[in-house]
Image 1 (cartoon, one colour):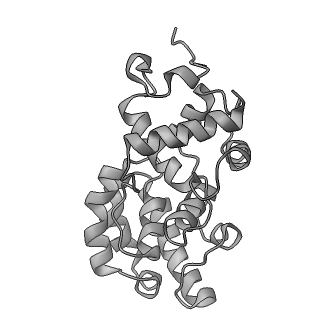
Image 2: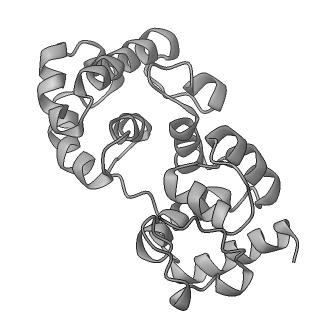
Length: 212
């Protein structure tokens, strides 16, 4: 079975396993998803979901975030880790969106990655979930699964993204990324791959690095 065929089979099987897979971050619009995703760097989605209600209550849009006092943003997001850098980025995002985009979150990878602290992972998530464009979100679960399946042979996020764009159906790539997160938490975990109960067992190359 060729790589593209294995990728298509993986997409189909994870669709059946997780029919309602969606982003695990809580948000109500493009701005909130952008901010929540920036906060999720080196932090769990569960923790971000605890923090953002109060943050968005005080600073619900780009304009209000652009005027936010730095110390207040730091206080609100402190438990997310790296809070000083993240707070500066959030305010910077608010200012740039307000001054250059009329408060509207742009819909392209190129424009999104101009924003402070926004990388390709965040940009792809926004493009896929908000604007329904083909997207490949290369989080740790996605990278791990694609390597174990033998679809890629690198952990470099940009290289994984580019290779998987060639292998995945553009219409299904974004949702597939969400499903790999759930699958990576439940079955193909970082600590152990539960191959005996894996729906991808027969198409997997099982490229698993053994812990010494």
